[in-house]
Length: 430
Ligand code: UDX
Ligand code: UDX
Picture 1: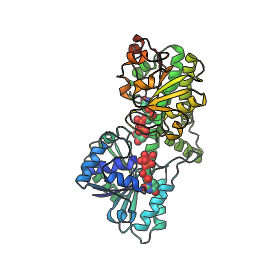
Picture 2: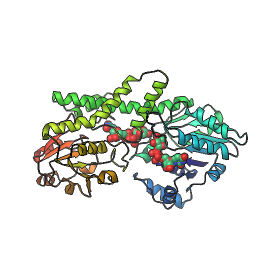
Picture 3: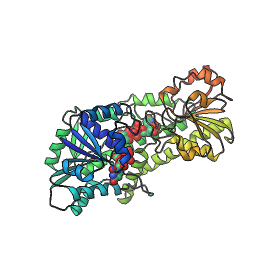
Picture 4: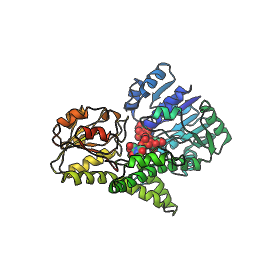
């Protein structure tokens, strides 16, 4: 099948490459010509394991190409995936202006039957709006269907998640569109569910909100575990073995970040507000998350005293490992808080780069964790990059001013560190 993917961001590029891998001919479209040039050269402009090899392979085989030509893209493809961003407005609602622009373009340039598939995360009812925007801008009476087909891929695992999903959700009210989507996904062995577009849109928000809720639940419980001298890791393990609960997304830490959870929970809350339904559990989920990194710093303060002029090494900048994405990263919130307190900050991340505005405030990024840790009063873990586990902590300790490690991701082997004379403190975990 010939597929057009509009929006060659993180979601769109992965989606396009996965369809190329499944044997389809794909065109990736974006308004940003630098991204398009880079992708056409086989250079992935963001970090995602395995994706660049796939890009080079499918460019060579001519299974995928990237372009900024909207008219040509819409003319030559009958299946159009929308993967443009849906950032948050000031009030937490989702900004649909990019989706609207794409729908207008489709209406304007369509030259026959098109299936428009919305993969971007959008508020419930957006499929209907997309259809209206297309109709308003249609020059001729060409038929079309709008389908909601949310993605559930995690950054850092995108390829695996997209090739081997737990389920495919097709939100469609048209048999014609449903059979096209089923054909697209026919090689997938997971359950494929067909429901209304509204239900599909709700599933995406509900899934992300539920996962965010699990994280805030365990984070809040970790605060109590600190007081009761109980190890939260054992609690996560113990409850996670119950199949009804499951072991995932119970890792306590400095809170969730990224381009999805914070934005999507806010958007669902906003939908509740618009429909006069108070989603009070989600309000608390947000509240716990927004205060979790502050709780982490407060615990450090209780041990170190004031952080003013304290030399702090922060390990990890990205919102999670295996990505260079800094969107809503708890590590950046930690840096801002430390800056406000006049701490001296050194940072390390295997791939993410410290934003310029933070560099300008005197924060220095080093290329090795060992160098970052030299002569510091404490090390803070901001991201659970697995390589931090493998460091020579004995050696690191010898170069620190005082041997404190505050593990904001509960990722290190506390007993091993203590053997080396380090003073370790996790979250709900000593
Ligand atoms: C984003 C959202 O975060 C996610 O919730 C949604 O499901 C899909 O879009 P991501 O791919 O990470 O995911 O966003 P981003 O990297 O910002 O990519 C969006 C791309 O769309 C950008 O490359 C942007 O240039 C492009 N775009 C935007 C267009 O091509 N046309 C437009 O009109 C607007
Ligand atoms: C998420 C969803 O998992 C994915 O299905 C959706 O399509 C997009 O949003 P992503 O944001 O890439 O994916 O990362 P995810 O692995 O879900 O982690 C989100 C945040 O939660 C990270 O900051 C991570 O560190 C944090 N997290 C995750 C925890 O703090 N504890 C956990 O147990 C799991």
